[in-house]
Length: 449
Image (cartoon, rainbow, N blue to C red):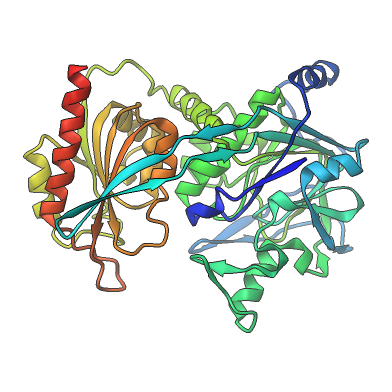
């Protein structure tokens, strides 16, 4: 039986679905591990039959990444797939070349309430109890991967549905459908739904096992840290290792984080819009379940060397003053209020990830404006108080409460007015004071318990 879950789409972030498959026992998983000859991690190299050549350079245009001097030894284009099928269905139809492992029994997350402050009033909103499907890993012999978003193609030219986006003609932005009459509709279909194309570029080949991590929005730190890298957790649970990883990895920052996770630079392949990569075996892990995300955060915290005993409790204000977007109109007044309550001001973009992780891990109270930097809350300890300043009427205002509940954090939102298009927020100090009072009361109760 297949189970679908749109929990990722509900965040207003990645719009994918997860498909699970029941009836696969842990004994089956152990048998699969024991009977396969796995290569030693980190020692593989491109073999003589590989034809993959990285581009000579890259052109960054905002969030877009364009290869310069991409080379291929094959000049024949490939016909694009005409169907998107769930990975579990593909495994049933092609058992000789596709193996599907369900790694757990799923997880139920309890209802989560979080206070929201605006205009001197406090309203408690809640997220309902939610069932999350099991994490999974699939192995596809002679599979192919296309594009920066890594659409996976399996046997019989069938695309893996879990790796596609904007499928079945459903294109939307901020949960608002996009008309087929707009160029934006066809651009998104072209880049996200491999079946919307007639032809794919000539294939390049790499010998060995390739794990697919990249997905849509990989350029954004939040998605890269919360949704893409945690796909390593299902691989680790299944006991699978890869020779190469398809993931955004061009910056020194990204290489250092991947290194902390035990992935060497020679194992990294940067996907791009002109790349059709064929491999001996393509490994497709699921997007992270709540338990996978917690497991990944603990592993990364350890890999960064930021998991030592907490001997000092901090109160930190994460400022966006240097970013130029979603800044505070009267940040000086907000800082004076916070400093009176023992806060330190930090600019996370100035620090390596190890220091960012340690700061959040030591914090008992975090105040920050809504933004990708709050992804670092995965490093917080259970019971940490979070006050998030969010533009009023933002469509995904509950994006971070949906994640912090996985880590047993106490989350409050202070809505701020955002009158202009430059997203300069006007936050009411009485609302911030009310949120601080509630957070400090919770800290005192926890200390007295």
